[in-house]
Length: 141
Image (cartoon, rainbow, N blue to C red; front, side):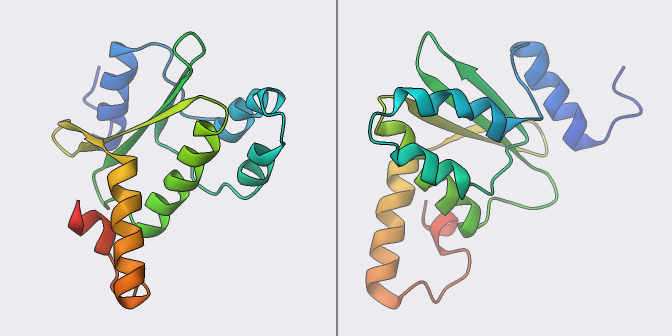
């Protein structure tokens, strides 16, 4: 089954086997339903500027959770992408939803990326040197 797939695709296939709700396309469109839950319309501005496309995602309406999977086979999560996830985290938080970010390495090992720790790290780095260091956020986590 996996012989003709890339490492990236194999990891995504394993994620989908564990949770069949996992999607790989249509992330931004799938989030649009959340706009109706936002009385202040703050979420729409974040969604309009959203440039991240997770490798896989699950939206669980019962738990009010958006779970994003990032497979780091050829490149890791950049600071820019982490900042996008931080913005999404705060938008979802404003309507009582959660964001879970899970990074998978080339061997399929999963680790939870703590968005709040990333945000605090970003704030500390920005205060220190106005983000003059590439890769500083993920390096500090």
